[in-house]
Length: 338
Image (cartoon, rainbow, N blue to C red; front, side, top):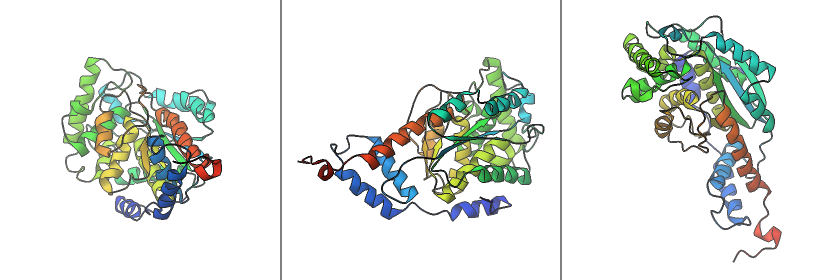
C-alpha cells in the first residue's frame, strides 16, 4: 500500500491513528478457548498467542496461511571505523545469495510456507559515517521508511522483517544507547565476530556517534535518521504498515528490535501487534526486549539476523492458531468437561 507520509511528523501521526485490536474477536476467542478439549491453561503461552492473534485479525477462528518475510539490506558508512569483521561488499554478495535461494532464511521461508521478498536499499550509496554527523537526512530516512511500508503485502496474515547490512549491529547499538541510556559498552556486542579490539572500536564509535549528533537525537525518529541505517528504517516502516493494516508481526533479533524500539518510543502502543520471536545471542538483546516489554518465544543462541529467529517462530504461531481454531470443543467431541 502507498505510504501516506512524507515527513517524520506525518509518519508519527499516521502511526498514532492505527486501529486497536478487535475487542469482540478477543472476547469470542477467549470464550472458545475455554470450551476446547484440554484442561484450562494446558497449552500455556500458545493460548494467549492465539487469542492475541485473533484480536488483530478480527475473528475468533483463524488459520495462518500467508506469512510474509521481507529482508531489507543496506550499507553503513560507519564501517570506516573498523567495527566489522567483514567488508561492506558482503552485503551485496548476501543479497545475491538471498535472491538465489541459498541463505538460511530462504530455507526457513520454504519450510513454513512464507512468501519471501528481498529489498536492497541503495547499496552503492552507504549511509554517512554517523561518527562524523547524521547517517541520513530526514528525506533519506523517510525514503527508507517508505520502502519498508510499501514492501508489506496487505494480503499477508503474519509479517517477519529481516535485515542484512555490514555494520548494522553498531548502528542498532547506537540507537539503543540513544533511546535507553546507559554506557555504549552496555549495547555493543561482537556482531559478526569482532575481537576485543573490534568490540572496543564499536563502543567508541557509538560514543562518538551520539556526541556528533547531539542536536539531532531529541526524538525517536531523529535518532533513527542520525544513527540508523536504511535497512533499519525500512524495518520500522514495514512494522508500522503492518500495525495500520492489522497484520501481526514477529520481531527478530537485536537489530530488528532496535528498529522496533524507535516505534515503541515514538507512539505508545505502536508494537501491540508484535511478539518477540526469539532471544538473540547478541549480548544486549535481552535488555532491549525488556525495554520493549516482550518475552521471547524461542531461545536458541542464534545471532545470524536475516529474520531467521523470527522465521522459526512462525511455527510456534501456526501451532498456536491451528490448535485454537481446529481443536474440538467438549460438546463437539462428546467429552465431559467435569
